[in-house]
Image (cartoon, rainbow, N blue to C red; front, side):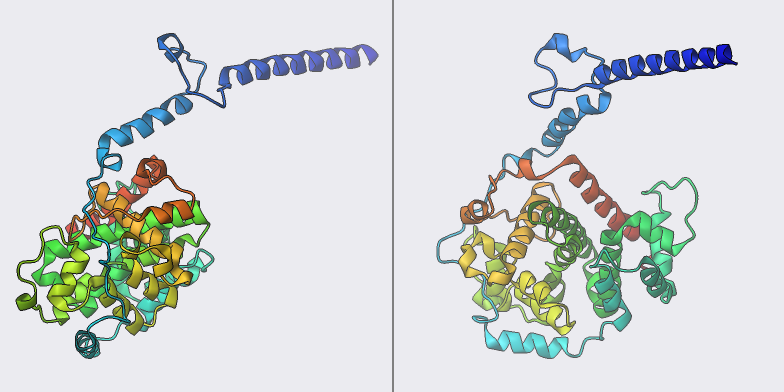
Length: 383
């Protein structure tokens, strides 16, 4: 018995020694320096002890810069001092009353749609409640299933559960589909008559939504889903310009370099940011949403003190996300690239270099948002 016990102990000791030796070798093989570049010369590039993932991260960032050179070379349009978008304090009252009157006769947004939009703003929302609410609308449920099962998402097997489809798409992209459903029921004629513009604005808004959620969370620890909702709705006013009369008589001989948001005021008496805020207020959305929509262009025209203090960060994030997404090619209706005032970067401790803010994972998330829109449009699920 003692001999057997001693033999067993010897085997155990040998096994432990081998395990420690193997772990030491594995640790040495996986060690990557914590500072400095992964390699400093050709001879180090061949170091196969460095994991492939660690070797490719810098290359992925470099490839991103090569794919989107505008991140480092933006050609900003000039913004003259003293020029700034009108707010609800300075807007032409006649134009405002005309919009409110015409908006009042639009079909009301379904309570269930607004409730769903609200639930998708909160990560703590019960997934079962969201799924149940979506399932009460068979047409919208079918749209979600068609999108996730489209060729763009390449599912290995058909997804038949609405809850599973919502999980795979993510709340941000489901919000994008909710907005389309709301617009389809509110302004069907815009989509029918301006399909290309409709899709461009929607794609841009979906990209800004993703970017704003990311920047809000990583830079300021703000609620990701709330910023995502504001980003999705920031240009919603562009859909509602059809409710206003275009004042071409007041818009002749405008300077070629006039920012689009100011040009809109010459044409319609107000800009899309204010139009969007009025519509968001009609839908009884939270104040942080309506006020940020109204001021989302202000950081390119006014210092931080010119924006209501409670939405300075949110307005900066949306304006910055708008700039980033346009630099990435998701331009929407216009391609204006006004620079944000440097006071914002200084105030929030940022360099202003977009390359420092954009990551490969953000690019992938924006592309997923883009694919969600494309799959919806091209599967014909909205017909």
